[in-house]
Length: 335
Image 1 (cartoon, rainbow, N blue to C red):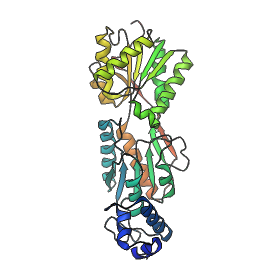
Image 2: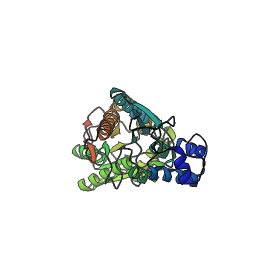
Image 3: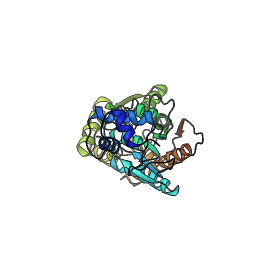
Image 4: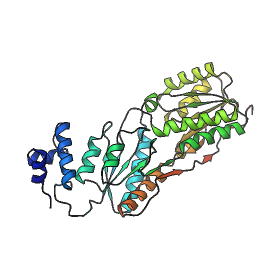
C-alpha cells in the first residue's frame, strides 16, 4: 500500500506538506500542490477525508459544485442543491457542497483526496475551465449543463435551445411579429454560460425562421434595471408586442414597468418566462412559462452518477424536452 511518505519522497517535500496539499487544510503554493498531486497520481495514492487509506472502500459522499459567481440567482441554486441532496440521501449518500466561484481548487482537492466518490457540476460554461480536471481524474462526474465539447462527459440539462424556439413558436402562433428576449445579467453571457447562450440561439433561430423582428437584451435585476430595459426595448423595437423573460427576478418588475408605460398584459403585450413553474404561477399576472425542472435535473444527475459509480453504462448527454404551460400573460396580438 502506498504511504504518504512515499508521495512525500517522490514530490521532494515533507509528509505534512503532502497532507496539507491534498486536504487543503493549510495554504500551499500552486506549484507545490501540483507537484504533490502529480506524485500522488503516479503512485496511485488515495486517502479519505481523515487521511486514512481507502482500501477500495467508498466515502458514500457526492460533491456538488455550485460556484457562487456574479449573476447567479441563489433561489434557483438552492432548488438544485435541495434536489441533489434529497436524491442522494434516498441512495444513502451525503452531499459535500463546493461553492468556490473561480478556478478548480476545491474541486481538485476533492477529486485528489477521495473526499467524495463522485462530483456533480453546475453553472457549466461553453468552454469550462473545470473540464480538463474532470477528464483527467478517475472520480466519476456528471454535469448539469452541456459545454461546447461534451465528448467523454456525462451531461444532463433542459434543452434550452429548444426552449427558446418553443417560446417564439408559441408567440408567432398567436400572431406576434415583433418579439424580444430579456435575458440573464450581462456577466452570465460574458462567462459564456451554456444554458443562457443556448436559449439565445434558440430564440434567435426561431425568430429568423418566422421572419419576426427581434431583439435580445441582457438585464440586471431590480426595478431600475427593468424600467431601463423596457424603455430601451420600446425605443429600439416600437412594434414590440411580445417578450420572453429568462431572468426570473425580473418578472414582476417587468410587468410593473410595462404597466407604468401604459402597456397592459396580455392586452397590449404577451409575456413568456423560462423559469421554475411556481415562480411563473405566483407572478402578479400568472405567466405562461417553460419550466426549468430543477428537481428533475438534480434527481437525474444523482441517478446518472450513482449508475456510473456502479460501473453501469450511461448516456453521454441527456436533454429534457421543454414543456410550455399557458397562463394569463399571453394572448393573440391585438386581443
